[in-house]
Every structure is written in structure tokens, then in C-alpha cells.
Image (cartoon, rainbow, N blue to C red; front, side, top):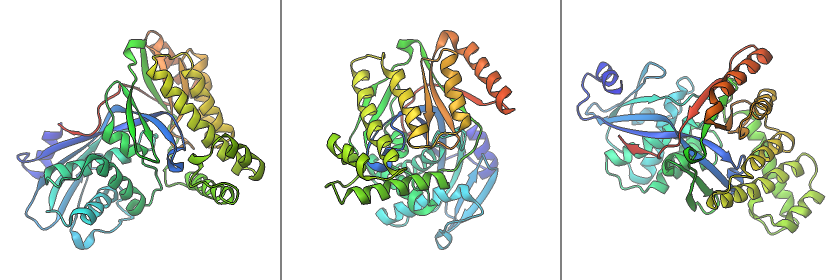
Length: 381
């Protein structure tokens, strides 16, 4: 499909190279990454594709298959475009690459993604990483993979204006099939931990509420601000640089000195970091017995302490477990988006039907159900 469509837009596919980066589902470790905590995402088999070929036209020509739009710009117009939001991610990446390596030659690019936008599966990070890795490889710029992830995050923070943490760009870069990526967002150390669902006869299922949210939205920004306020107060009592630095004694002090809702926000971050470590340790021992509890505890903490779930997410988790899922919780930023579920393959069809039926009866429309596999991180195809 890509080749035919590239030919339609640009006349010739000769010389185009294609790169792809995956979306992600975060198993556990929610709203911890911007507090320099721990996260455990998996890369999924839904991708963003970036096809690139140098041109001699003194302008970039970018076509989005998803938006059916061709957009042209040159270095003089490398500015944020409030009317064509989709192009700003690519512009942001080019902007960051220029800071590192100077101007690159103009090129034609064809963009396509099959990651549902706004469902919390990180289509934006897959887009940024595919573009950054593709430009770097095509022009042989010599930027290492860790820097690819970091410059992609900077593009989203500084150019697009969304205050995301580093997790999404890291998993898009370093994910591996049949593993989860344990990331320490403070040191940026990471480890691929065994996560073979087939061995357990389980499937990774994402259920999308179809309630759309934007990561740049008010709720996400408010939570980040509350975390910063809490940290400012705690620094009067404790020698810490981030909420990640809280030990048991420091956490106890935080619950005594912080007002609500700041102490609840801190309680979520502190305990969520502990849950991620417990989850990883159990995966390494191939002990899955406690994983459902960690995931449910995470969801309840996001509901009652961090207050980022919504009626639709809570309903989906409740029904998922009622209908026999191995485990379930909200994933992503919250305020809509999706749940992540591990479901036994032998009940998958019935389970999916029951979830859809219940959700439709309650809310009047169907949820999206995606049955996913794990995948590798960014690469050329």
C-alpha cells in the first residue's frame, strides 16, 4: 500500500526509504515518568511509517496519508503551524536535529500511521521517533539511539508544546518483541524484561473508550503542576530533587506536611514506583501470580489518589475483570483513552463481545477493541 500511494503523490518510489516505529501500551508505572520514576511499557504491532527521499526543490514536501494533505515548507517557515497540527511533530524533530547537526537537505516524505490517535497508545512518539531515526539514518548523521529518543521528546515538549515524559519515545526506540521495557526515567537506564504472552496463553488487549483526549490538555498539565508544588514544599523538609527520591521515611513526612490533594498525588507516585519494581522482579522470576493485583492497585490509585480516570475507564476495568480477564487497568494519561488487559486466548471472543455489549448499553456506542502483539522498536523496513 505504501509504495502505490507514494507513487500517486510523488510520481516515483525510486530512492524512498521507509522507517517505522511502534506505538506502546504501558503495563504499569503511570504518571511516574515526569517525576523521574519507573515505567514498564511494551511496544505494540501498530506503527507509524515514515518514507523519505531527498529532493532538489529547496523545500520540504510532506504528505500525510491519514489526513490526505500535502504540506510544503522551507527553512524560513520552520515555525509552529496552529492550523496543520499534524505537521508540527515533524517540524519539531527537524528543529531539534538542526540544533545538533545543522541544516539537513530538503526531502519528500510520506507519512502513515495505524495507531489510533487519542487512545493513549502514543501515536505522537511513534511519529517523532520514526522521523528522527529515519532522517538520521537516511542522511547518516551519526546520532545514537538514546539521543534519538531524547530529541524526539524535546520536539514534543519545546515545539509542539505537550509536556510529555521520556517513556513513550524510549519504548518506540528500544522496544523488543516478547519483552517489556523497564525504564528508569532518572538515569535513563533500561532493561528488556521477558514478557512472553504466548507462553501463558494470554493476549494483550487494549479497549479504547473512544473518549478523545489530548496529552496537552488541562488535566495532565494540572497533575504535573501539582507534583511540582508538592516537591517545592517537600524540599523545605527533605533533601530531594524529585518525588522519585522519596524513601519510606520521606514519604511518611510527605503525608504529614502536604495538604490535599498534593499528598494524594505524592502517595500515588511513591506507591506506583514500588509496584513497577515488584512487577519487574516477578516477571524476571517468571512468577505472574501477583501481576493482576499490581495492575488493579495501580488503577485504583489512579482513580482515587491521582484522579485521572473517568467513568468510562472505571466501567471497562470493572467489566473486564467481571468477564474473566487475567488483569486490567487504565493505561496512558487518563481522562479518556484506553484500558490495558491481559485476557486468556480461549475466552477472548466471548470476552470481547461481552465488553462491547455492556459498554454500548451503558454509553450508547461501542468501544474500540484492539488485540495486539508485542513488537520491536524503530527500524528500517
